[in-house]
Image (cartoon, rainbow, N blue to C red; front, side, top):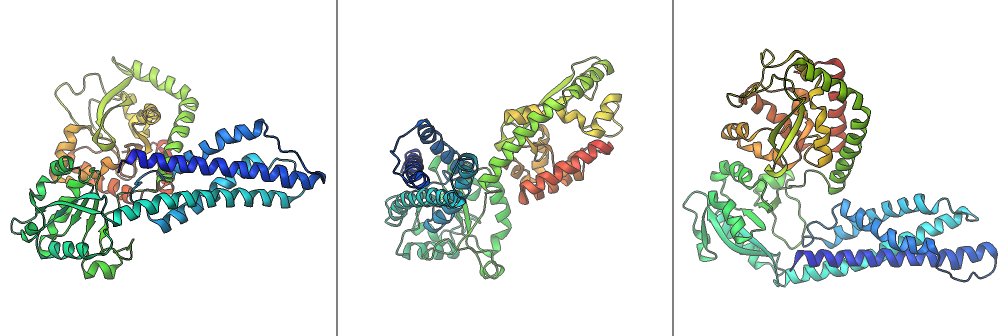
Length: 470
């Protein structure tokens, strides 16, 4: 099935539901509430407010659904979850519309307000969930019938993998796995070869995923090979695939196995969603708003620092350098220059507290983190966030990866002006210190939330005010 056409179906259904719900509300208020108010029947007239609402209200709903990620993973939807998510979003959206558009209307009693709220909610939720369930049910049934599925590769080919494959194939309802082949882990596991082709070793996974359009990876690894799991997960980081692991009894007892289907086989899904989609959208909105406000309020400080940097030594005011950001894409980071011009003419070098290349004003800017202020422009452009792991140069990433391959996990999120690692550890003076700081950035990603961002911003402000940065 085509993903774009499926998303378009949901968009059309949501647009239609929102439009019909608005019409129902308008007719109810005109024919019922206003008739009660004046005691005589009111002739139904579609005025300017009606047509403006018919234009903008559906757009509002589509933006709200997009913000909370309702159009992501369009083929991996569950009907019960569909009802629950639609219920909560409908409640939030209806309350926003009520307080923005309806609350200031001149209606006789509060009862009329509640009636309007109830009619809008019931009509919008009822229509939306009905159309969505029709679309989702049709997709689920097609998957269960085996009409289409997700290209799947199995990692491992021993007893465990064979048992998993046989269990999945014995299910009455197809869970959607289209097995393309398997890859070996230890060179001996070939039991699956009677069911599907062997495509090589697990080290071949990245090119296989691209070449075979793989969407699911199932790790069916024997306990003796569990040392390879970390390597495989690092290898799959950044790949647009769902990763699942066959659990053992210890995983089940620890509560790691969460079932999403009564008839499915028990698998642990590696959750790649760091934060809910709505929090990511809110985080991005917060980044943009606060960055614009900061640029406006700090304009006198920008000018003052620019003059001081210009007077401190010959060279440009700003220092621009290529760094690696979200999904490994390079971008140019902007900072106030804190070193003498051409400080890296002999190649990349990390700075230290006693670095003779740092200017006098540069030392102050580094301790207060004020050299990072121009990066608000990187945030506005979408290259960075206010909070996130600090971006590094490819030169140092290669050296870090040689010792700590899990560094690639940092590219899951936008790099930040400030970070947990920056607050806790400060600037790193060598690769080993970069690796030590790495654990704080990994902890940030695993615990990422708006509340954590606010805490890190608070402590960053304290460092700026105290001038206690390392």
